[in-house]
Image (cartoon, rainbow, N blue to C red; front, top):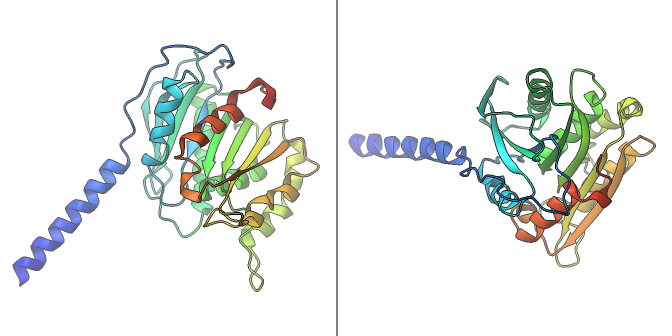
Length: 274
């Protein structure tokens, strides 16, 4: 029995580490072999931020699709460990080819998204100081989007960070309060929203799914997502909401129809490209 338990334990540990390894393997990078006539190409990178428990699989399909369709291509992967240390894979060049950067959290199963706020700040500071990135786009799913919003409100005008160009949020809960329990994170967000008055103009696209006519994507109610409206009101930021019928929470980043929408919101000139 002891041998059986030991063997089972070893198999379990091996399976866990195998999962960890596979879940941080990014897709084979696809070069940008052709350029579209309907897309402006710049050196502004787009960062892809997963939600709670997210990994490389969150955006691998989207990143391949963007490259194959000529929107941009992945140049770097940044892995953030538990202590906020960065491991950078890939090379940065100042070529105007819409560079894409996948951000992974080595420990994605956190109790809340407080750590992700600090980790995102570290990533942005690294890009500004070591690659001279002046502006950035970001695509962020679920709690990754919640962290992105909080980071932007708290430190978006800080001069040692690049400035936001476009932020595409995918089912990001901003106010998770219940009738009996307020959301402390949202209260802090509204208390510091005056920081946005000093921010440079950018665009936030708030995308959310609607299932079967219900005001939810199956996991996040719409009112938790659209609570962002009150935070950015009267700020220099442009804010737009995009409800998508028939799309559940997990498909906001994985459905091909969403990939087309994300590309449009990031690079279409009629979306206010800077």
